[in-house]
Image (cartoon, rainbow, N blue to C red; front, side):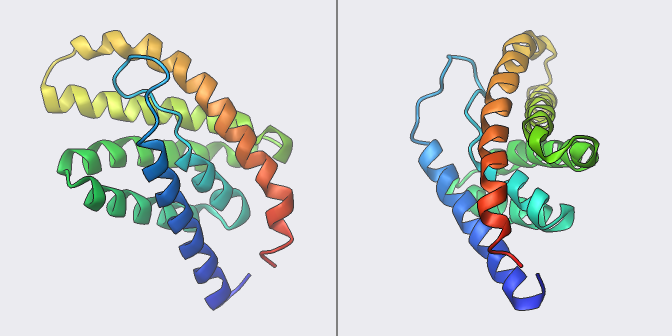
Length: 166
C-alpha cells in the first residue's frame, strides 16, 4: 500500500480506535481495580502493526492518545495513556516477528502486560508511593485475560482486512 491510500487507511484506523476508546470509557470496569479495562482500542493498534508496520501503528496510537486526552480534558489521562501505550507498543513491536500470525494473541498479551506495567509505574511516580505495587498481581491477571481477548480479535481481523489494503 502506498501514499495517499495508506494515509487514509491509517486515519481511518485512528478514528476507529478513538471511537472504540470513547465507547469503552462508558463500560464499567470488569473488576474493581484501578486501571483495569478491556483495552479494546489496542485491537486497532495491533491490527495496524500487523498490517501496515510498526511506525504506522505508532502514529495511529499517538493520534488516538492525543485526541482522547483532548476529549478527556486531562493531562493525567494523556500521561497515563502515553506511559502504557508506548511501553505496550514497544513490547508488541519487539515481539511481533517472534510469533506466527496465528499467535498474534500472544503478542497482545505481552503488550497488555507492558501497558499495565507502564501505567502502574507512571502512577507510582506521580503519587510518589510504591504501595501501588500491590495492584500488580491483579493487573497482571487482567492483562493476560484482556490481552488474549483483544489479540484474538486483532488476529481475526487480519485475513479480511489484508485483502483491502493492497
